[in-house]
Every structure is written in structure tokens, then in C-alpha cells.
Image 1 (tube, rainbow, N blue to C red):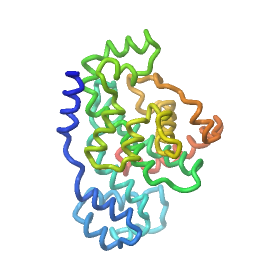
Image 2: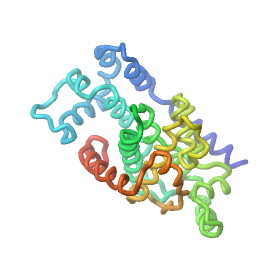
Image 3: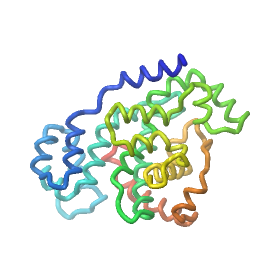
Length: 282
């Protein structure tokens, strides 16, 4: 219990999610909102403005002319792309640091977060009839709990690692047994603290246990599958190795085969390389 109390206190010490960013994302969800209204909120944020222009002028779009104004950039990107950029630019600082507890070098947790988010959108585009706007956000933040839990994992790492081999359990299950809580649950608490919608909170909390999600929840299983694919490609593996529970039922639910995943990986690498500079992946 003492560990859980200390972990919760660490969660509560995190800075609040920026109000301006929350407002910008609300505007982007409002189909009646104007570009001018959005510009009034974000025009003083140099990081957002720079990222919008960098993406517009990147190989990702391959435009023949340079985009110089925020207004032109917003029109070109569209609401969904812009939400992704704003969110990524806001949370990058939480993920960039070295995480000794999970044996992740500086920037590796961020690369894993971005890769999982990109793959989740590719999966969503392939298996859902309509776009789900929560998928990218939930996937980007799915491991935010590791930011808080890393120092606690570091203290008990040997015990957890032994447990994984002795009981053939996943590392997440070892976290729960030793600490009383795992990084997915901690991530859900952070998302609640930051006032994210319930479907995103739920997907973060259950991204290692999608079987507990409701039948109409597509965000959780897609984030789960995207995370597994990212780990299988060796991005952000750290001490986890591949000590995660495989859920064949997710593949069956969406009628996916191994060759479908291979095709998605090819699409992923094209997108990933095109946005490396924008999302600070180098």
C-alpha cells in the first residue's frame, strides 16, 4: 500500500495539461469553429506554429511551394492532423528523458509513443468503417504511466525480472504484483487528471488487457495491437523484451492476417521517416 500511495502522490505532482492546448483541441472538435478562432488560441505558441509549418513543408506532403503562414498551414493540414501535431508537441517533454527503470535510453520512450500512434491510425484506417479520432491520442499516451512508474520499477527491478521468468508472467503483471499497480493503470490516472475523455482514459488503462474493454470499444484493442507491433519492431522495447500477453482474439476480431500486419509496417516506415524531424525522433 505504501508504494501505491507514493505513486499516486507522484501522479498528482505532475503539471496540469495546458489550458490553451485543451481549448485548441476543443475548437478542432467543433465543426462550426473557424480557422480565425483557432489561430487566436495558438498563434502565440511558437512550438505549435513551428511544427505546423515544418510538417506542411516536409517530405510527408511533398508540396511544390513553401507554406509560410499559420493560416495556410491550418487550412492544408485539416483538424485531425493538427490535433496530432498539437498533442505531440505538448507531451514530448514528458517522454524524452532517459527512463532507467524500464532501461529506455533518452528519446526511446518517445519514439515508441509516436510509432504506436502512427501504427494505430494505420490499423484504424484498415479495419474501421469510419475514422476514430481518439485512437492517435490514446496510442500516443498509452505509456505515459512509465514516466511516473520508472523510478519505482528501478527500485524493484530485480524482483520483477525474476518474477517474469519464474512465473512466466508479463512485465505488467509483475508490476502489479510487486508495486500493487501497473504502468497502464497509472497512465489512466494521469489521463483522468488531465481531463481526457473516458474512451482515451480507458484505452490507456487497458492497453495490456483489451479483453476487459466493452464490445463497442475499438480504441482499446487497436492501441493494444499497435503497441504489440511497435514492440515486435524493436522500438521502445527496453527491459520489456516481448514479455507481453499475446491476444489472438484481437487479430480474429478484425480479420487480420500476418501479411496484413506486414503491409501496415511498410506503410508505417514511410510515414515514420517522413515526420522524424517534426516530432523530434532523431
